[in-house]
Image (cartoon, rainbow, N blue to C red; front, side):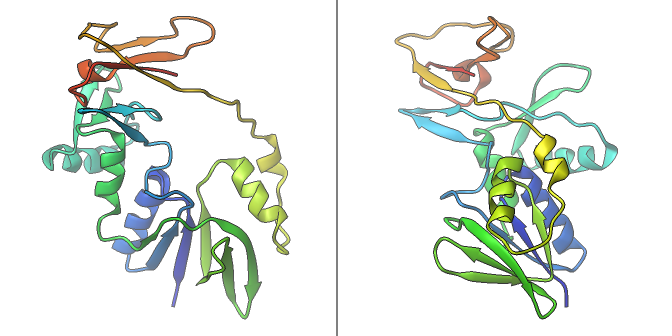
Length: 217
């Protein structure tokens, strides 16, 4: 019987797990963080919230649009701005959508995968917490440097050439609480205000925060 292990419980891992489960395949997810979501990250700011990872997502396929339409019907997602390829946001912060997607899935958090092995037709995933999870197939969804670290610690023969070509640049995020309500940019966001800042988002204008705050990315 197939049993798929997915490393990383961000939106990619969660949707992959849901599709596999829909197909009748046993699946579980492992994530090193204390919660699901990955870059769909939301932080509390007094009476409000601040998305300090992904700010929105877009739809580029009919299949994904069907999923998004369901999320809209469940009042988990709404259109934020844009007509061509609208930007969609989670109503209660992006991490709330991840938690919604994780319902009814087998997810293990606070599990950092260190290495993998293959014996007797099954993969063994070894975690820092000295646990071993077995699977017939593995899907990796973390950024390539994290996948490279796992593979370098493993005895498996794996082609890492494509992973080595992927480059990641560091990104700093600042969450700034304001003393009073302000309007900022179009729809509460300003894109590329300087060479060092990619985006500024007003979480109160975005509709996820009662506390005035800005996120600088």
